[in-house]
Length: 372
Length: 99
Image (cartoon, rainbow over all chains, first blue to last red; front, side, top):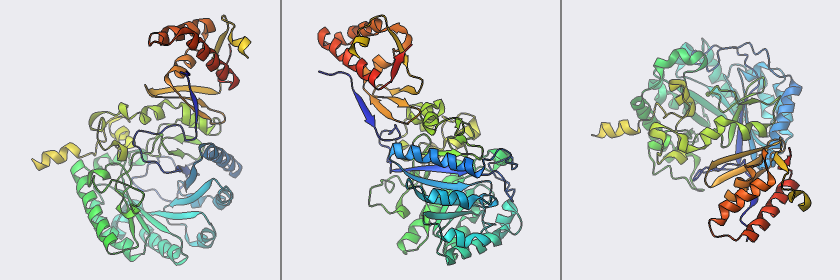
């Protein structure tokens, strides 16, 4: 008999029990820290970007990314962002390079939406462009209070230009006390503007946004706005709306655990909740090639100019700590919803200094108290 | 290669481009940090690989292996054969190298 065994694994080496994996690996790639806006809740606090890579440096990182995708037999999904990515005149040089890589299946661009006007035709020519994500915080008054005067009008204009060119548009809203009342209005605006996707992120008080810690929604406030969003999302789906409201983040599963039981037939409009992807199938790259587990969890785990992606992915103690769900603390520990939640590690770190702590915005016990 | 394995005083270690990780009692891997290959390890493979620290001799590791698994009723000749075959594979795949 043989008691010892070596078996080659084709995955990125880790499959959490019950974790629903697709075959994608996501890279959020910040190619510059330079930005023409100074939004009050920004996760950056430095906009000088002195160490950003040259175009040749970026292409070298792209090669490392595709090497990893080939070995892992994963489809690459890359979101190019900044700072403001359109500030880099050579961004399309990089995008065209990525277009030639068969391992890269989908490309997104995350932008503040103010520099779109002269780039629509170039964007239209990209065959792998999955979406352009524009940030919006509310109606004109609220948005411009947070992102700067005139930005709302530019985002609406950019949305119209992109839609007229058949480029899919996603809006991203950062939820906090200052704009939570705007959510119904934002959904109406998205419908009026024929936006394809709408996604909501929670304010993580880090970077410049650290001063906005008091604006983080309480668990009860978050529960209420999530319920409102899910209700509207279901209504729009029933009406056959072309707007898809994405709810693929931690905590959403708590709104309706039953409907979150995903299978291959579940339309994306009905999907609720997703496990934190840190250490599983995503990574964040900064302009100087520093690697973070997530943009909102600002703890460097390596640098791609010095190390292979394999070395960073396989040897980072932080990634291994987070992969092992037995390490989670508080309410997150032993929670039955870990496979479709696990809490936000960035929020835990931002509020408590411990990325393994329970998600401070989880209302799971609070909700039980309310029912009593 | 088997001649090398039979040298009881030989000291070997994990090669520099490999990383060993055990997540829990049922999940362990040896990971190549240069080219990305990743191998699942069963308990006994991990037991052996984790002992190649450049300090213990091959003979010491073999004895620990035999001591551990003979307790669960496996016969020594079978264990010795398994051990030698495993170490041969570890050397061939360049997971372990001479200290």
